[in-house]
Image (cartoon, rainbow over all chains, first blue to last red; front, top):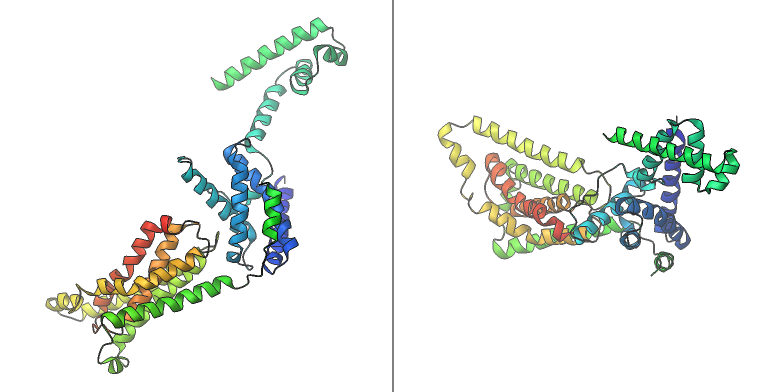
Length: 189
Length: 212
């Protein structure tokens, strides 16, 4: 059931961008600009997930793809969906980029809807892992890890929030970290 | 340049572009047919008995086959020049056309004594036919590549092969106005080979020829 809203979102993006694209092809400059703006955001995510969001090449690739979408707009078939067309161009630019920089990396061929994905899969996995590890700790240890290590409270603040003494917070935290480290070792071994 | 500025710049040069692909492909097809015809007239001319040949089934067997390959190539170029478009139909048409001619050839050979098979397949001109078709198809290949470069092929090897198929089909159809071979077996082997020359070259060099 979790898929339902996501699928709807993807459909909405498709419908909206296709509409703007068709109007742009008919000569509507405002619609064309709006489509390029919306696409730029999605492309930044797509290339960022492939190259790392800090890579200097990401914005270059976004711009190259936008220029290609603009120059090759006439190859869009208004009877066909927009998503596979835009995805094929973006992936083409990514493959071309890997070739130019002499990288042996490959651009995996995914479902075209990958272009509209707004979440970073690596980050999501990491978040899931942390949550799973924490859930195995006793309630008091988990709360302290959350407050101090994740939220960033000081020991004093955590002490006030939990009602434990500063020394007690330190000891509990120390035990919790050791327990976590053990669990990570077990999980990896 | 910032991406926002780039978008403003691009949006400032919007112009209607409906039917641009059909126009480009139409121009390329006309140029391909005209170019191939000129090369054939310069090199070989028409067969002297062309008028009589037009009422034989052998002439039309060859012409329908090669024209079907050209049409399959045309459909593939139109599809493969568009990013993300599916292109199965054209390959099926080309395969079906070849399968039919191969069946006709098998039937033709089955009706002949084995001693005449070699003569039926080789005809009089087997050693020249594929070469001539490839030469005649050269301008057609150039015209088709020109059209594809104005489109956006994201699978350049397949697109190059499709361009070669279209060019080979046009070249072989034009060559049919000169060639006096009549056997289906000859057509199935040597015409097919001649038509595949540019398809193979297109597949081999598509990545470099169709970069954008």
